[in-house]
Length: 168
Length: 112
Image (cartoon, rainbow over all chains, first blue to last red; front, side, top):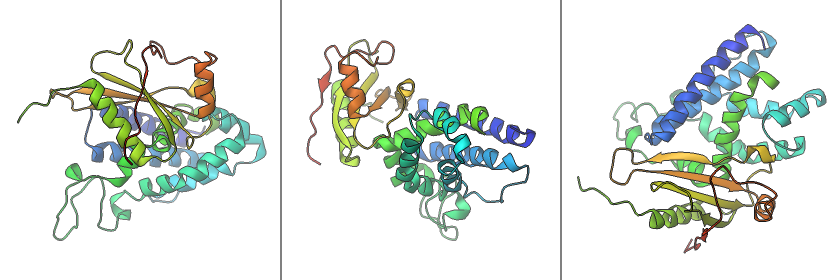
């Protein structure tokens, strides 16, 4: 891990700690989604800093990150498989394919990608707000909390942050 | 504001119904009251759509609910694959510390 990666990873770790605290304290879905989106963005950027060059300035990096994990060279496969707690690389690849739609929805929550629609930070629409995130029922939140796949995505993300030094 | 009483058994059933309604991969939901603190709901969900991961990842995810209210509680959900569930029943795969299948209740699926 280079020094740039370490900075991004440390921030992802701190955001993850806040996220867990929000979850355990029953914070509104918008706050938990906001932090989950930030954790994944910083984790992905920590990963992409591996080249020593800055990643693109965009919030839309989670899907790219997951796709990258599924396409690593043979020499890195076992390390990533072990780090994320899968038995075989093929199991990890299958799982990644299944969770990509959820990941896409999550990265789209960033306000500048939400196209003046549901986002976890600001009331919308911008010119004549009708909804506040704190009282909005996010379909994504239902999918993340009420389904096994959603809960597993949150747990794998947590592990991906914790184990980042072993594969990042 | 009227305080809502907390009924652990009925809340456990409600969570099971919500999860089954959302997730077509759930085959069964078990509610494990033994050893759980009064305001803690422990569920094991056997799910065909969760990824097959190594045994050291068997850990429930916990959600705080209604903090500061009369209905305050914690929900813990342990998602397992059918093969993990088989090994749990055969005592080949341990449950999280203090979790027990003693008096475990299989929650009805209800209407979808």
